[in-house]
Length: 91
Image (cartoon, rainbow, N blue to C red; front, side, top):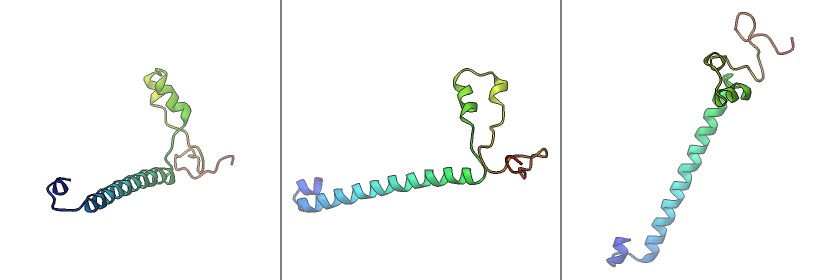
């Protein structure tokens, strides 16, 4: 904008530069959103997750013993007695 005020460039150059800057910012936001989605999908694919009821206990002043409880699997493999996760739900 300073170069425009000094008469070194036309206003179309200013608008073009602003448009490019806005496009780059939007692209950066889209990439960041994709990274967050990919990270969440990776955690889920690796068997991660949580039980909402376990999280709700943290908000209601649960005891430290309640907070240390392991989250329960939501789907897929259920840990067997050895903790290997090889048994199927309902089996």
